[in-house]
Length: 321
Image (tube, rainbow, N blue to C red; front, side, top):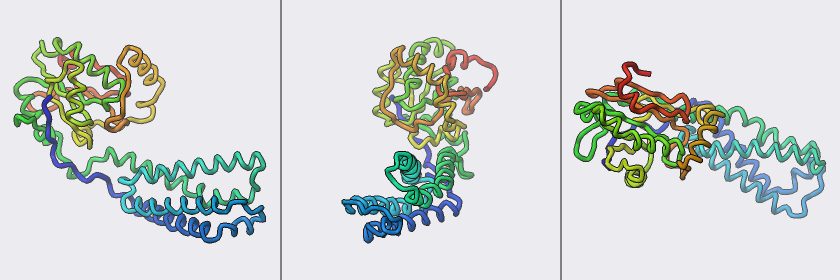
């Protein structure tokens, strides 16, 4: 399997609006203060609310320590909300789960309604800003900065170990470049099986194959060899530089998990394509491009992750899509 080297990647994340940083700093201060208070004065809140003191105040102190640790995480996330989105996601999930547990306790009468005031400041007031931060981070994964390499530069910069780039290969013959989903996806495996089955038909018309993936080059080489594609040039693009540069984005919920995707996924799975460990961005959409003389002449952008291209047909179609 031939490996490629991509150009130096652009900055890893887009600059977040200042208000997002302020929100995370405020969350950090709040959590540290609330957690510290619970640790130092574990009985105070119960006295204020007229509740029976817990038999083991150490449990309440442990909760305070956990809340305080979240505060440290939020302080780190405030430095770059897009890069540190997993911290925000974990916090958001906790802030959603907490009120759900509170509702159950209130419904069963295990806690007084006054205790639910904790959820207002601990959880509910953070839902909207945290959700907006996560939305921004999701969109930032697809952002293309103004100084991002052009499509032509990317095609010329992805070079094989022999020194040939995708652009140069396409000058020798038309090139069908297949951008795959992560190697654990059943549709990625189905795509490789389809390419293996139709390779002779594709190459009979004078078109050569190339693959782009998001995994480790050596692991993917062994993976592709299992489909008889071990000699096909491949690009490892874990940071999705080439994916983004050529116009491929992360999928929406419907594109990744819609009913049609589930149905097709079940059929592909039981057809023997199976699934594996996630190796790359699980939301990245696939695509197929035909290159001739250093430029893209045909594009197939999947409408959903399950769409199954007609690879030989793409090599002869007169129009882009």
